[in-house]
Image (cartoon, rainbow, N blue to C red; front, side):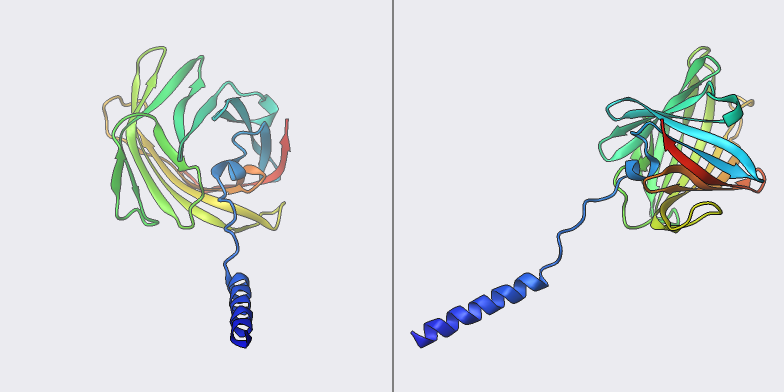
Length: 238
C-alpha cells in the first residue's frame, strides 16, 4: 500500500508539472480585416503639410465584398472606388469603378515569394488579382502580378505589373498617433496607360502602414514619382 501511495503521489506531481509546463493555447490568428477594417463602415483622414491630404472609406457591399474610396475630403464623395473580395485564404482585387464605368483587373501571371522576392512560384495565370493574404503570417512575403485592366464601356485594355511586399505586424507611430501596431505594404505599380500595346513603365512606388483596429493610410511614404509623406490623424465609423 505504501508503494501504491508513493506511486499515486508521484503521478499527481508529474501531471501537475506537465500542466504548468504546457504551452498556452495559441491566440486566434489576426487577419487583414483586423487591420484594414475592410468589412466595417470605416473611414479615416491622412494629413501632409499641415492639412488634410486625403480621405478613405470602406463600404461593405455583401458578406466578404467591400469597396474602398480614396479622395479629397473637400470634394467628398469621390466617384471612384476599388472592389475587394475576401475569398478563402485571400483578399482579391476585382477592379474599380470610375468615369461612369467599371474597370476589371485580371491577371495573366501571378507569383509569390519570400521577403526579397526570391524563391518565386506561380500561383495563378488567370482571374482576379491575389492582393493580400487574409491571415497575417509571421514573416514577410512578396507578390508579383501581371495582367490586363479592361474598361468595360469601351473594351480598351491597359497592361500592368504590380509587385508588393507585405511585412508582419510591428510597432508604429506617426506625428499624431502613437503606440499602434501596423502591417506594412511596399508596392511598385507599372502600366502602359496611354500607350496601348507598348512597354509598361513605373508609375508608383510607396510604402503604406495599416494600423490594427484603425485602418488604412496610417503612414504613406511615396518614393516615386516624387517623394511625399502623409500620416493618419483621425479614424471613425460611419
